[in-house]
Each structure stands twice: as C-alpha cells, then as structure tokens.
Length: 222
Image (cartoon, rainbow, N blue to C red; front, side, top):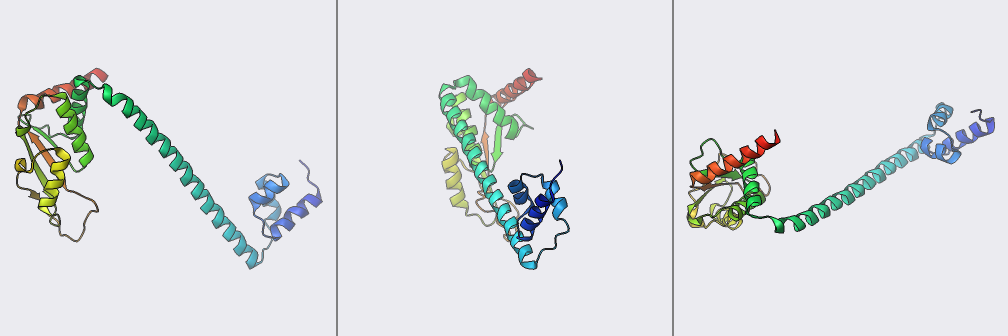
C-alpha cells in the first residue's frame, strides 16, 4: 500500500509528542512494523523518553493485573466445578468405591515393602484424613488396632503436635508411640509444617487386600 507524505509526517509528529508505536499504529490504522520503520530515526527528548518508559511500565502493570484477574476467574470456575462434582458424587459412593479410593491412596503413599501391617505416612493433614475416611468407610475396622507416630523437628512442641494429629486422624493420643525427632539445627523452620504422621493398622489381611486392589486397578488399565 502506498502512503502519502502527509500520513508519514503525521506519524512522526505523534511519535515526537511521545506516543508509543502501538498507540500510533492503532490511531492511524497502520501496521506496527510500518510505524516502527517510519519513526526509527526520530530522536526523542529525554522527557519524552521518560514519559514513554512510564507508559510502558504502566502498560505492563495493567497487563499483569488483567492476567491476574483472568487467572482468578478461571480458578474460581475450577473450584466451583470441583465442589459441585464432589457434592454430587461423594454421597453416592458405596463401600466398594471407598475401598478403591483407599487402595489408590495407599498405592501412592503407603509403606508397601512389608505387608504384615498397613502403614501410611504423610505430612499433609488433609491427605491423612482422606485416606483414613476412605479406609473406615470401606472396611470394618477395629479402632484399637491403630497406632500412630509423629515425626517432628526439634522446634516442634510434642504434645501440641500429637493433639493436632490426633484430631486429624481420629486416633486417640493413648495409641500414639513416642515421637521421632528428625535432625534439625533449628535455624530453618518451615512455616505451617506440622511434621509427619505415620499411621499403622496391625492387620496383614487388610494391607494385602489394598495391595491386591491397586494392582487389579493397574492391570485393568494396562
């Protein structure tokens, strides 16, 4: 496309006034590459350069804010979708479904080198709570067979952590063993870190049942 000298001059005037290349392109309905070519030799005063710099910074800031808002909206949609799905499905779970859930969680996190007892260890209270709920919903258990041990750093309060993990797991403190203190200098403390809880259920049959279930699931998908 052939452009008039008047158009080129207008573009250069806008640039000299401190307009950005994208703004000029939009205002003059021209490609940004064309505008950039026409103004590349325009020498701008320091004040204009500073103004353009501030505009660019403001533009990037606005862009970041817009992206953050879009991410928040998308995250809210995902959370709402998940809540609706869980609210609809969980009440329909029968014993078999809870057994499968507990088997899958055990597959991911359980101690499976020896199947003479069931072991499950994690630092995430929500995961511990989820596994134990699935286990209790899926199988007939004897609560007195549960044992627990808390893995702590030196800066943790032993009794407070046991009480917290007891509430999370539903296992009485009387069934907790002596806590294991992991080596730590105390100089570095992980915020909100509650230590780990290792749960044992002394039933080889149950451990082997979960083992059989998750292997059956894996084999069915291969």
